[in-house]
Image (cartoon, rainbow, N blue to C red; front, side, top):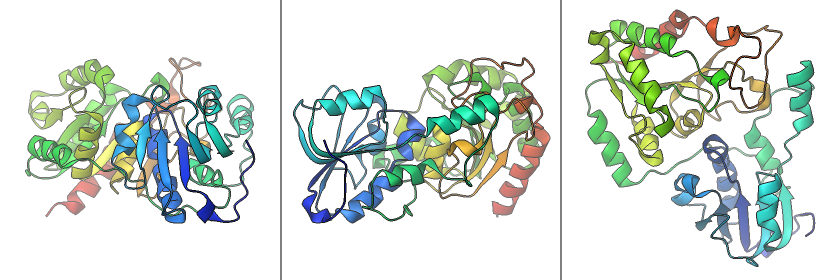
Length: 341
């Protein structure tokens, strides 16, 4: 397997893009897929990912087919393989193939180590992971300008329309995250919902996966009865692409650092983003969409991890608890009232 040097893009007729997980990371590959398709309009572009994430790219017009590590035939031949995962699992998949050229996304983990362990930031300004994915094309696209893009089916949109109706503005709340230090406390989300409901005509939609259902129930239970009647929870009920269609239909999104944040960005929604242990230097800010970031700057312990932790290592969780719910609510209220007729 050689190093890709682009001379004649017409010589590339088959491409495999590999990104096995997870939701947000895969959504962030979609601008690169669009640029790749534009550069190689006649090429077949396959996408390899884990089965639960396949719906995110299955309807993408840039993608010819979606395969999984289990379904891709050993010995399958590609002119070019673009490894946007670049770990042991993706390399194992690629070793089973016949690829003329392989190019890879460079994670630059040493920069994350310096930032997490020693709080040394050696980044020269902000660079999105989308731009770093684009670098893995090695010249096929000079710059990534495309937005994130998802394509829910007509059935997904019909589900969203039936669930939401047309009764006034809707604020989507993506309250979950894989790791504790990325989750804003539920009681503070409840306070935000109460304030927004008292000052706007908006309804609130709770979204998340099956694993978020218990937390959704706790959040609903923490609300006053009058406020609870304005909240619809579809956490654990809506499928991945139904959730995408729902996010396409709302007016604004309040979210932790989670995959649903990136799904919402694919529909150009105004995002209110809460970062606890996350920091923008990791490169995972929403791509190509307006957002407001709420965080606690100046903490000597932040970031404590580049992926999140199960507990606050210092025990105080100041990165989240020092973000006042009233401050977040006031910005949401202002935005929703401006958009209401």
